[in-house]
Amino acid sequence: NFFKRGLKFDCNHFIPHHSQNSIFPWKHWSGIIKVPYLWEDDIAILEKEHFKVSKIVKKDSINVFDFHPIHIYLNSSDLNAYNDSKKFMDNFDILKNYRNSDQEGVENWFRSFLELSNENSNYWKN
Image 1 (tube, rainbow, N blue to C red):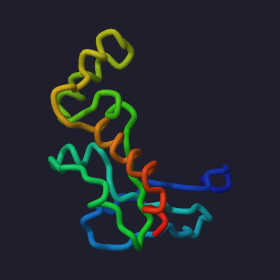
Image 2 (spheres, rainbow, N blue to C red):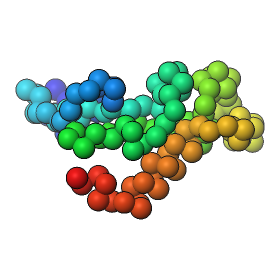
Image 3 (cartoon, rainbow, N blue to C red):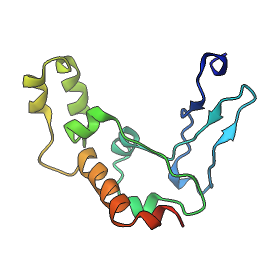
């Protein structure tokens, strides 16, 4: 099994932040620690969700956010533009033309997430 090969953590379980459940890691019978996440950038894009980290974080729960590096780089706000850019992933000169600069997107969300983390590290401890 994966644990015997050195895998210690698995973060493949998505439990949406609006589920109203507190979520915590758990130890699987195989020995792997399962770490659920509550928010994912591409799902937020699909759901046309307005990102406000302070509205998503749960005080009585683990808070794992899933940001994809390509969505941060493209500042994705629409998956159609991302899908159109896929054929240029190996050509930075063309790929950079797909960056969203017209509206709020994943890069903006990521920066607000980092700002909240840096400005108020106690926010995450309580």
